[in-house]
Image (cartoon, rainbow, N blue to C red):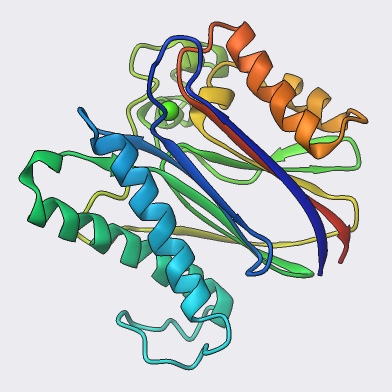
Amino acid sequence: MRVSWAAATHPGARRLTNEDSYCARPDLGLFVVADGMGGHVGGEIASRLAVEAVETFIHDTHTDTNRTWPIPYDPERSPDANRLNAAFVLANRRLGDEVGRDRSLRGMATTASAILLRLPAIIVGHVGDSRVYRFRDGTLERITRDHSWVEEQVRAGILTDRAAREHPWRNVVTRALGGGADPDVDIIMLSAKQGDRLLLCSDGLSSVLIDDRIRSALHSEWSLQVLCEQLVSLANAEGGPDNVTVVTVQIDAS
Ligand code: CA
């Protein structure tokens, strides 16, 4: 597998703390972005714990994919799709355990969007309103569907994309990892093509930049690192109302 990648994260122009977390583990084929929420320190802890839990499970099952899993195996899904789903379920349980230990963390939760590369297959796992995009041959495709109140209104034809970005409830997510019942994780299977670029981002990017501006940036000749930093700068130039995290992965050879 040959990929290049880069990442950038920033608290934004109006916040002092950064409640987003990410991980980039090209050795495991794993890239994750998580956007935490919950007052005090909860948001930072939630996103960090979720990323660590996903990373740990993917690491532990990297060579030992036959180990007995603590959650049921779905024979209709590929082993790697099962791995990513299990990683998300375990991350949710990890957050529940932490809240059980420290009641001051009650209410903390996080989104999580991940890609697991098994080229030419790419497995996407997703809960919440962080996004995964694929840029291919000049076209940007949104791979994930936001689990958010405004997205439901857009799908029902009640709000436009633009109105959704400006709506006061734009941050309200309808699914998150935060303990409680096992989450319903969206698992999406993609196939990679040489030259594809994948973008994972928190809503600090996608709530202020329309898809066409993201597409233009991905279409540029910038290096991946400059691309990530430019995307963060563009979000901050739009007021930077929220923490911004971007991870880009380019398929150099599939
Ligand atoms: Ca956010």
